[in-house]
Amino acid sequence: MTAAKKTAATKPAAKAEEVVVETELPDADTELSAAEAEAKGDEVTVEHNGKTYVLPSPLDYPVDVVFADNDFEAVRIVLGEAQWQEYRKSKPTIRDFQEFNAKINAVSGN
Image (cartoon, rainbow, N blue to C red; front, side, top):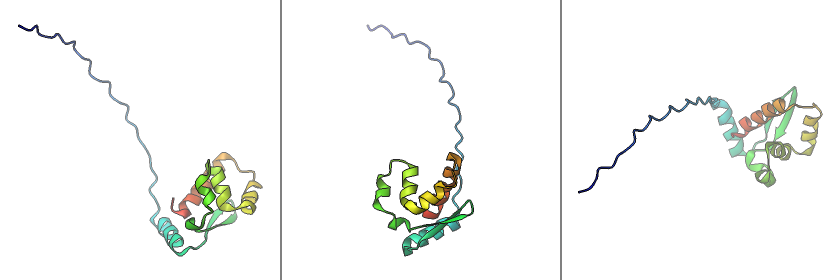
């Protein structure tokens, strides 16, 4: 005869906190124009703080952008040294850079 195993009562698992992730819906027109520019190899422009920056089509970015360690380095490569220095003259903040980088990503289809 085998003895019955005693089992301890288990506590109900604590409820996980609900995590709300807000996502920004992509702008279809921006994505379409980015895709068209990429397909055609057209340069794209980014307006930021009263200046216009000209970027190559994403497929024409220098290959070094793939090896960039961070967003700052990637933007510097994409802009090219002259435009990067022009941007730096504005004494941008981290917040400003984040906005600029978001604009670049939007026109690049990222």
